[in-house]
Length: 172
Ligand SMILES: [Zn+2]
Image 1 (cartoon, rainbow, N blue to C red):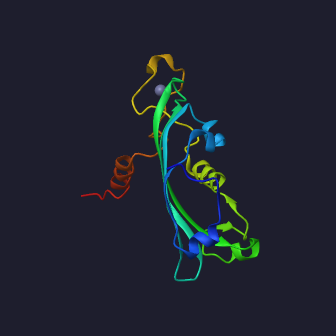
Image 2 (image 1 turned 30 degrees about the horizontal axis):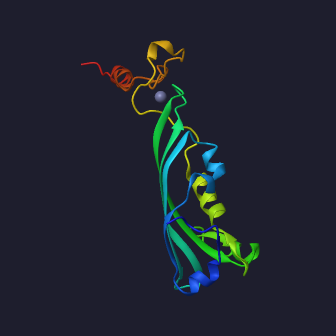
């Protein structure tokens, strides 16, 4: 099932609405512009009213996509997973009162663009760059300086110990 573009979130929360389906590439053009291709984008969303009487939309977005590897410039498969946890608020003022763990979603009585919200959630959790996990480019062709994990300027702890032993040496 392709998720509808326009929904009425507050009404859906009232009747515990549920979406289990997918969005197509054309539904999320801004995400697509950052990808080489998109195999699938599965979306599960549940609308509810929580114990704090907040109307919520929670769920997951799972995508199998291809991004451009920033090392070899060939496509690399990336699994996207987004946890959605939004609480509907009427305005900015109410949004500020939410605990930090809950993301505010300013929603009125008018229909909302669900595709745009899904797109926003994906963009927020998408990796900025992607690389193949294996060495896709021969290391010798790269002109990157070697990384030194152990700076040599650090004093050798054994040397320090040696100095202590020497200074505390007592005559027999
Ligand atoms: Zn690569």
